Length: 317
Image (cartoon, rainbow, N blue to C red; front, side):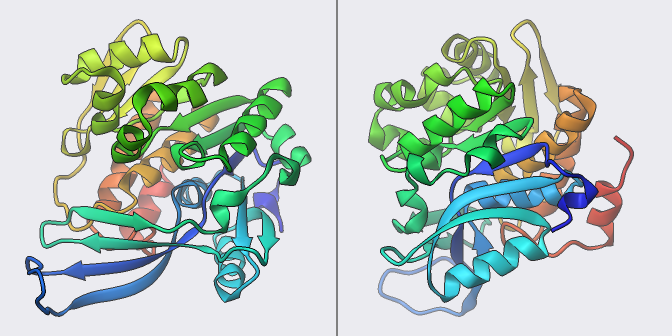
């Protein structure tokens, strides 16, 4: 692949690729009842979504993950190639390619049931060390930390990136899984990795800090992740960027929620793309808020770009 015309993509994303079975209804589901709606198969996985959105925003991007040696795995490779993401995929016959059931209700809110696919079995010995060590930045999601494997692989990747001068970012979703794992256990698995950027949503911030207001949450997260830039996603209220000294509120670009699936991933991918190019977290957060606003007005984590999105993505950095 061309890597967007450069030899070394500056961004490497490690984690899950999964296929979303998206189920959307226009009315409230009744227990034991039947209803019409939309049922779609769409590419997803939190880490893969971030990689795709960074690539769509113009940043040469690598993705490291694990897939089954099955038809869904073949489709995953085709999807990443189509999105111009350079894929470093480990294939296995022992596990199927990941899949997730995504239920979107009549209000646009989503609930997910994740299976344990091949992406949960990435081992440290399977890491493409050259791909990780040559990137300027590595992004990890919490889905690589909730179980081991793939936790040990994610931690090894972070250490490799850091040893080679790269910066590292982390998305701690989801708050339900953090609660199930236990906050102390979760933090013991990730907080020592010295992340440069942490991108939680408000619910995750509340669970990790025990605070409720956005300002108190970012203060608490700064204590947990000292030295990290905290970018708190506030959904309908925009975002809050905290650099350890001061906070800047980024207003929302829309409140027209159709489907919240993938909103946080699109924000992260757009933010990292802009920030790697501009080194301006405030401008990057404004840009990411606009991208994620477009996403929630459409169905799925990676809707096909239209003229409005293309104009936003091509706007000067």
